[in-house]
Length: 172
Image (cartoon, rainbow, N blue to C red; front, side):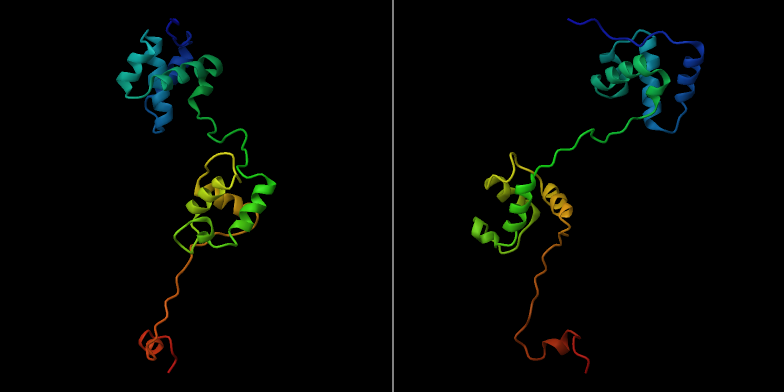
């Protein structure tokens, strides 16, 4: 079993900064300060997590971050992924565009209008992607091609000869 992790010793100046962080309006700073001060008192991560209502891994992450960066651990890092992999390769992107020019009924769907979810499902079934992707991934892929996805609109026409007048469509 691994020994419990604790925050490293800190100076009076750092302790004052952490205690000042307890009055912060930023929830991230407040939580980090609570974790670090509790750890400095000898509390173990499971106990800190239980007291603060957070995950044990959150506590460990805060302690590791402080031990590595000092007070820099009080500012949140970027949540943006370092590297993004396209779900559709170049051939898959073109195949997706071509697929959307056909009716969904040709692919076993019970509708004549494509939805992003249907396009994602069919693209996986046709091996355009290695794994099932979301409708948002399909939309983003089409956006890279310069294609805007708009919801299909069903136009209703009435056989009533007075339809345009009744709906206020005529200028008479």
